[in-house]
Image (cartoon, rainbow, N blue to C red):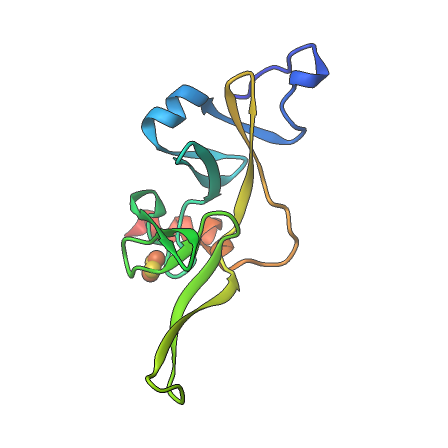
Length: 157
Ligand code: FES
């Protein structure tokens, strides 16, 4: 259920945003999942900061709302509970460690697979939390798990 716009423009939710919940409820729950505008989104609060992304992991649809949050290479990531893929909270980049075999000793370094998970923008207005979809027209891997085709498969399982 969308909030009606307050009269003052300075305190209106952004256009085409989706209401998630009261800030205090999101902060207390730490993680909130909600189907808004046809997408299942995860909104999480980590160290006082709100982040939003597609709820199902870009790898094979794992439930990111159950993942741990850890720092890798100085970047905050959610770690998918299914196969431990690491996804940056801010950009949705998939991180992995690669070992350069020609280095002595072989040294693992963190690398990025690029943006794999669609992350969305979070806005707070009058202590209400809203999500505005990242409408990048390029397909992002996590998009597949938002399709009706995927949902239908899940419902049959
Ligand atoms: Fe997330 Fe495999 S489904 S790591």
